[in-house]
Length: 182
Image (cartoon, rainbow, N blue to C red; front, top):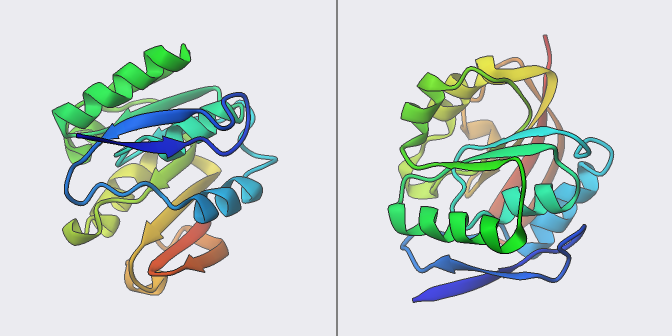
């Protein structure tokens, strides 16, 4: 069984993309995505993007649609990773790769650095702090980090070098945009 997500803006605006029906897999709500990409309007062009918990790929495909230079998606679930790869082919997306493994394992082997990181792990796994600490060395100085959670962002124990610059809430979803200050 599969679900659909809709790209909101950019080159692939209104395109529908399928994703697997997997427990805990929830695309970032449209309203939150729209807010996020309004925040990123001037920063997304030519950005090197890392999506730590790609899931449906909503954030990655939206970033590519709006001009990101490249995206690395991390997705441990093989069935969903296949959907991501199929969607990359469907969109003829260039400079986009899917790493099929747990984020902790992929981060240990990554050497490139990123301008923008998406951190929205499955809420039940409570991985914010662990993934933030592993990803931090890969983020450029002044790089941006989008964090999404089901709880107050102050509870997540993110690196002290991450300064929150924007915040929003939609239903149970809390989201923040941080900048790495060095």
